[in-house]
Length: 79
Image (cartoon, rainbow, N blue to C red; front, top):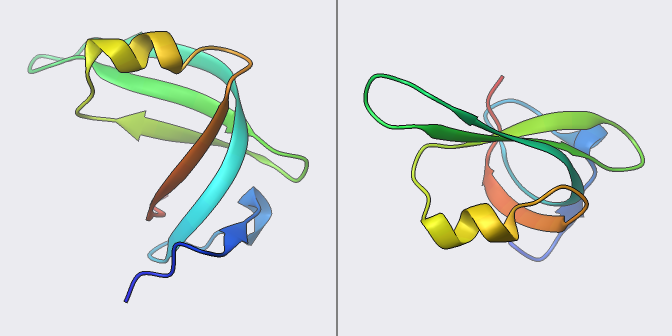
């Protein structure tokens, strides 16, 4: 069962656990790799800063994931 009803702050995240977060995007970078570019977003809330890496994304998401925007994300936390 995936609980997508409870928000966590960035300082409450633990590696290996799934979490739903709300944060502001501070910076967005396209990182070139051999296979396909990756999208790296630096995010923050009132408690900490973190990064979200997108391995698969659509061109439309590049326009939506911009500096100053708010992001809601769910997934497994990895260090």
